[in-house]
Length: 251
Image (tube, rainbow, N blue to C red; front, top):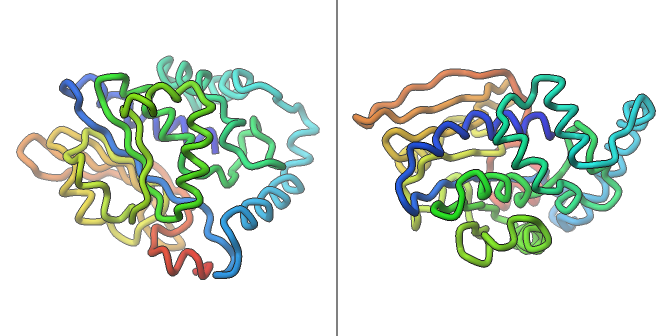
């Protein structure tokens, strides 16, 4: 959901001023699970898009938005975007490139959007002296994300190595480039994964939904002395952060 995307970006944005040269930041995502082990990620995407199309028809009839800039301006009016930097980045990265065919690209509604969109946005926020890393354990989704990024305003960052997307278990982070100034997790963990806490740099921040049916968006700050401070930002509802096998079986 675009509103949630902007909220995450806003929570992570203040960390940009704390990084050193070539300081990396990691942003970890997961997608809606396929319905069964026989369903491909793309089949499930099509199913979700059909549902969201039906679900949002009445919302669209009240006043559709047909541009990326229009979506961002609407979110600013609602107060979902309060940072000028977040607004600039979200206008620069065209969400339509990352939304599967059949989904309304500029509607402020939840939809299966894959791993590439937020990674591209965060890469622009980090800038050429940082590193944004995306992690997803379904190879087809990683390939799709990279393809979308290559068509976006973040293509040069991907080419220069500022942005990268990898096949891996998001619960384990990406230790090769740790420690990180910021970690974003796009699926709900039953508890905060220890590996992510370890990979968070002192002075860094992690944003992660935590819980099972009832979930809270947790903001985790690692203090300069290595101690951890946690507070809840809001109640949320996310798919579980889980294993590849469980995701393919549809939980």
